[in-house]
Length: 348
Figure 1 (cartoon, rainbow, N blue to C red):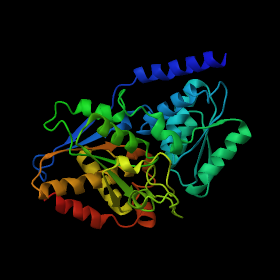
Figure 2 (figure 1 turned 180 degrees about the horizontal axis):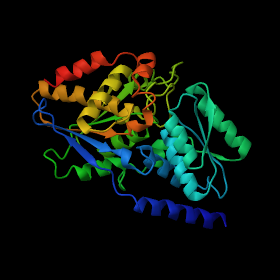
Figure 3 (figure 1 turned 135 degrees about the vertical axis):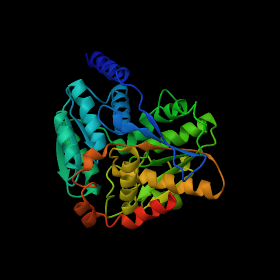
């Protein structure tokens, strides 16, 4: 009966995937960067509104195929919000209880979406506490702890099979520069950057993977120093990316270049991108975009042409009370105006 239920659950997830079209690839053509094409893969169009929809699907399939997830079993996850929203969606699809362990300052809209999908939230004071709290809940409830930060890089088929990297290159086939100079990615678990980096090497593409890291995250320091015990007492203020500890799914040798992005620069790039798209992206997309603009300026200064691809991770409508609230930004992030001025100067 357990095997039969698992087979039905896997079929449900696969059927849900077949009902979803691929996400769009948006091209920005900016006069300030002649011969340089910028692209955003719009992951906000997934059913649960973010890049983490792909990860949640992969984690459920991984747990089911390993025999870890069984009928009626509670699913517990440690998350800053978006993964939990997507996992709550798949848990409801399979009729499983779901609990998200997350910091108390998580965006209210994400909390509401988790509740909409039938999940509930367990709050902790610090992002460093989510791991132990999730493990304890799983033990108490005889549930399954998804542990995205450990299993993200191994749950996804990085060789192909319509992963995000494979999708990008298929969509780029008819563009002026089908093979990008750079793919720019921020890291939360590290699973997506590992997938993209491995795929580039597996297929022999010369594209370089550049990972951008926000303030208070240890990923850049680990990439430089390779010290696995690095930690930060303060969590990232850009939800969904950056971590206060080195996560098992973060694979530094799959990355060609890393860049620190100040939080206020992420907000400035997010605001600027809204003016280009006519809709709100999230702050992690702003972090990505800041990195893209720095690389585009470098290519321009070096007289190079080509393409740069990044991800539009989620919608800014989740963050109306935070990143799109000037008072909140002033209190928690700082003044984005000097960074916005840098972008405007770059566009001249």
